View 1 (tube, one colour):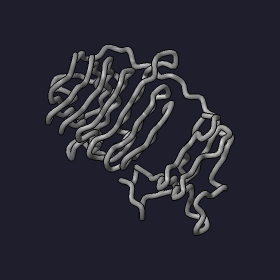
View 2: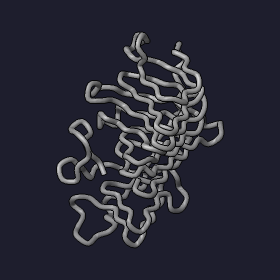
View 3: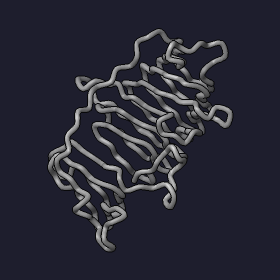
View 4: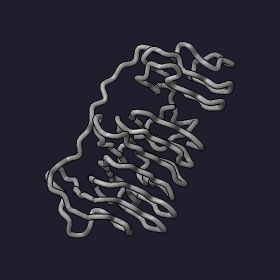
Length: 249
């Protein structure tokens, strides 16, 4: 289902639309699978095959007749798209090495680039216990190794005093965000973005987004398997090689 993030958080009564499309380029059987109680409030687009819908699953919208589980007017079979690889920026960055403890970005004394954004590089980001990475400005981070969060750790974007903070992470390695997950205090998906930079000629990238909260953000990772299990749902946009939504995702 679709909501307009510029007007605030998702609300089933006041901020919901049926105009979003779940799309796939796969042409083999069952390119989109909805299990027994899963539903899409919007449209489905495939490269030729019909979606598979379980006994209690639904594909529907505001105008779907009552009692109709799969609305044929909301399925199209001519979807095509070009999903190019993305490269991390290569300009000079503040080198932070392996980040394993609480950190707030930007740091005092750091200077933004000509684009008014602060640019950092990390060899890895591994948070545990009650560690937190907090972003209070316009920040870009390139991580050359893995990203993991566990325990009560979390990645926070924005605060009451930094309502326009935003973060872009570029990573080619594996991502496993658990614990308290990503806390996007701005409630705008565009302010939290993960760019999977693994190339189409490399091995498959795995991006797992879980945790105790919700993920309010964007993921563009055309060569990754994205596994979404955040406890309170996913709000934003996902482009990937394969996307799996499970649990309360």
